[in-house]
Image (cartoon, rainbow, N blue to C red; front, side, top):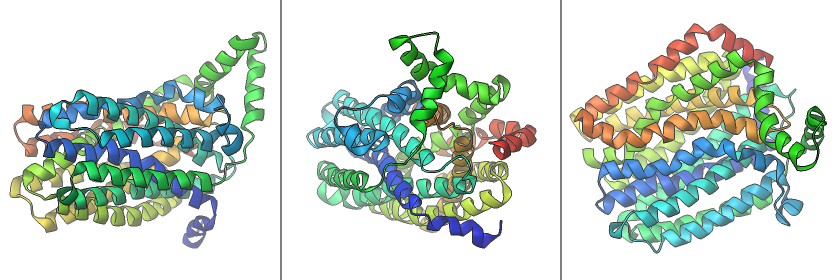
Length: 438
């Protein structure tokens, strides 16, 4: 495949729908991620508590537990009109809108239990929405259209960062002037726009119902609700291990868990770090949101082409090494202070890392996902990556306090990526074979 053929795949209209759904997937992380950290920090909440309350995102690591419901349960009235995937997406967005409107009435300085509870509700809705959105992306292409895997992953990532960065830029650029309560009113308006996008995109046409019927034949000795439960709750996981073998499946799951743990620790504390080192809300908005979005889009497109031409294993290795390097550059900022040119250079490296590693990561997981239970199987794999990012990273604020300096913290997070890279290199031939055979 030449470079022209590589980029020709981006003309497919289905990638537009995937982009819009990517925007919807990224936006909730503004609500409970950077916005929440900025809101709590400006309210005088200690960084250890900021890091800990961010652990509500642990539900992203657990969403595989209820992913079978997204594959099999039809929401009354809504599913019949919007379809299985869009019906679940729209329903979760409606619930998030209600929770965001409630946040506008909360003062975090009076106590963290209510903000934490609302953030948890948004996280649950968002994690459920992600199940449906990932399945929506996978269902758009048949198993024979493997040439679309990196472009679809890239467009989804660009959409995610668009949904995360632009509203985040709006929030931080206006926070000092209008206050965080008004910012969350703006966020409610963004959510309404995303709901309109969900109504505008088309539902993918699949053979999911027929494939699930074939799966039910394996449990024909059972009847009624027992068979439904076995097909819904057991078959998606059993099918994954049956397809890949127990040893390879476990090896893959361990790699997924370890790969982005260092990046997760950095991400959880990034807003707190920017503020403590001396960057203003306006600088955070311009550089980490607006500029970060621009270079993420550029490197994601390049990362997609690289992974298509040279394979996802090389993409993962390159992205992992860059991940360690970008964390070390944050240590330099901690040492020398808030230099804008150094922040720009660091963000270039950091977003290069995100682009190359995430495109390869998503493409690889998609290739391993079956079409009968795409929501459940992809959620199982993605949840492992989220597990390290949400549970362990909840200790990030305490880790900074324990290490005693930001410099030591970023050096430690750089070292965290090494175990997964060593494992990936040791089994690179096997991993490449999985990607090629999938």
